[in-house]
Amino acid sequence: MGWFFLLLLSCLAKKEYPIVYVSNVVSYDTFTIGQPQQTAKWKEAPRIRVCASTEAPILRVQKAVKYWEMLGYKFDGVFVDHRINCLEPHHGEIIITLPESDFNNERIASTRLYTEKITGNIAKVKIFIYPRSVKKDRVLEHEIGHALGWKHHKQKFHIMHPNWLEGGTDHSGLRKSRDRIR
Image 1 (cartoon, rainbow, N blue to C red):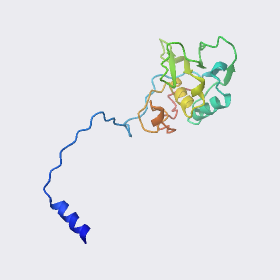
Image 2: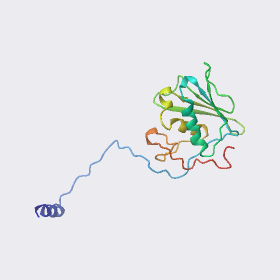
Image 3: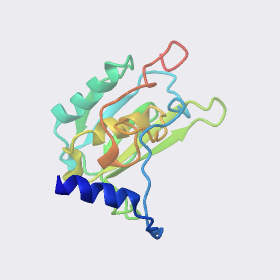
Image 4: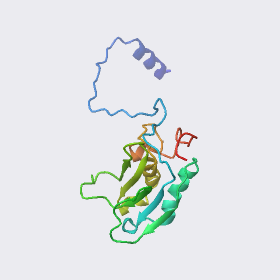
């Protein structure tokens, strides 16, 4: 009975509490309105060339490719290149290679798209990745998403989320439609 009396008194008290302002608060998006955006498309299915220096296991790359094939995208094979000069992609190719000297070391990986000036189609792509990141869950799937022309999408748990910790395997809005790549 004593605790009930204390609760009643605390409710009847007219004490005002000061407002406390908190600085340095970070907000996180948990829902993004709209669909992911694709900036460019491939005219033909791209090949994927993996530079051996990345130490990317071929099975890991194939798993990432299967993720996108499940969504309807086509690829013209995956192969490992053991040459020392495995640096530049050829037309119609996605290359997975070590980062260049100006690479931001705070990133897990990065993708550079080259498009044709007249058509705007993707001509070739370079995915930069360190061996320490290549086996990390979802990284190759995310970077291949960029290689297919997809921009970052700040939907929590989405494969194209810009922050690896907040990303996931959600692929909403990424399924290939007839007007996307063939």
